[in-house]
Image (cartoon, rainbow, N blue to C red):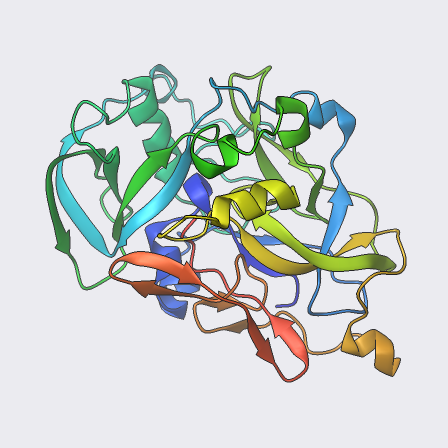
Length: 321
């Protein structure tokens, strides 16, 4: 389906790392959608993030940490995380401005990973249990908690994974000299439901990234995307996160365009005067811009690279972010 993508980070699922049956038939791998009216099928359409949302975007030290996949298809011995107060009194209500296991408007498929993350963070995190801040989440049975030993056990399927926490203000990105204001993203994927850390809510919230049908989409360029939103980070932040990173890159360089603008990098469809074509059909680990540049799993960790196919750049997400 053109314009479909897989969410990353805490809004992904262990099943998103598997095959098409795991991702789509399970109903446990969140899939989002962008607008698809622009001509260049290989470019991800972006909208400007409203200032009301940007002013509420938490990039300070109290912001929730990033969630990264450390080992696909694996489990560990773990200490079960206690339920949050909200879960203990859950009345199964659905809110369009909160992020949890409830169905989210504009997203197909659900996962309990985000709730697992909330439970662990509310109980103090995993630093006291292991040096790598590792935790496991099992989508098949809800098993959630901090790893109590360093031993990781492969499953042979993608129902569970071992994750780790990483502060958004630490590491290469944090040492780049970016201020809080400059670190707030400016663009999100057109038409998609976006997760972001809200200051007002003291938790993650959602908004609809909307700037119309986005028939005209120019200013084409490669930009770094964070698929936990999804949204684009600054070039400085994206490049700083790549330098010296021996594991999976934090952000994916993806061909993009900006709705309502002209100029920039021209795609083959535009140069040939063609209409919509190619499409973002699913292939390999995900879709052709379903969430990150094409990825594989090496020694239990994701590694990404860009893939070109038949004149249309296809991008693939395995749900690792």
